[in-house]
Image (cartoon, rainbow, N blue to C red; front, top):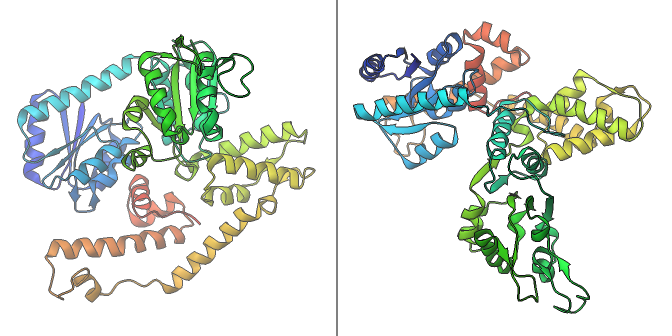
Length: 475
């Protein structure tokens, strides 16, 4: 028997779904707003949520991450009267199980409920969360946990893996973790930096060559693909691989055979392929800069590593890790992390991600190696200037920002100055006033969620939802 939550402001839809849930032997719970739904999630162990899109207090699509990050991680099925491809794409990217239009068929609802509960039951009984060897990978935020779960999933087999992520997010660390934890691949771990390969020598480096194959080839040489036989081949920055080589490499993936440069004999190599890129390969395919057939071969399993600014809960643990690492490396007495230093680190956007954070901590340590504390003054100038600049930006915004007038709201996006339908007026009013309210609320309480909840009468989860919705964060 499962707990199923229905969040919809239409009483008729709530009644229909509640009846069908009960007939399947499960317990329905209802809510007419996102806020009510989040309260139910705090109080109950919910397995599945049916979620409408257009709700009185917000957009259901934007609430999906808040719901799925609940400690019980319920699945979410979006139900909407106004389906769109854009909405479906956003729903799936935000973690929804499915996206269905009203009116829905009874059999479809039954099947969805059955499949979700079968899936949750199967996950509980499989040993997916075995102990992983993740040396050097630090973090416990929800986006990070999702990536670790994906490592566990793809480490159990030998499928091709494509790791996406900005520079400095840890793509090579995750590739090595997949290799180290793989239950089927135990051979060498061969790393190829595609961005550093000279185009004229790419095929020789990958496939090897025979003596005399070209000027300077004074002896036979094994290629990196052959060296990866029985192990893992990691192609870093795969987007930099020349088009001329992509075709030859595609055959290697298909046949597990290749011919060294200048050779008439084929060589077998059975390897596990992991690729990484900070480029948009899908866009490159459309521009003719990357082969479509190779792209689909690479992305059997995809992992998207989050930016550091999207996993700021991990900054403290990462900073402490870097403090230990670099103090030991430079034979310096261990330093303690001050709360105000941590606040500056957590407020920074980190365009260089974890690599930039590590560099900043190492530079700070070396600037005053004898001091026992990591003071804000020791942080790199770029980090400190950014912190001060954000404060100034907020002060300026406070002076210049004013609440929209009633006339502004009535005629917003309406060139003819005709009164809009009430729903449009209400939506405009909410979208203009809500962010002002929550910005001022959080500043007033010093970004303390407990105080904000006490003043607003909302739950902490609900306040967190609005902070994410309007991209509000402590400067």
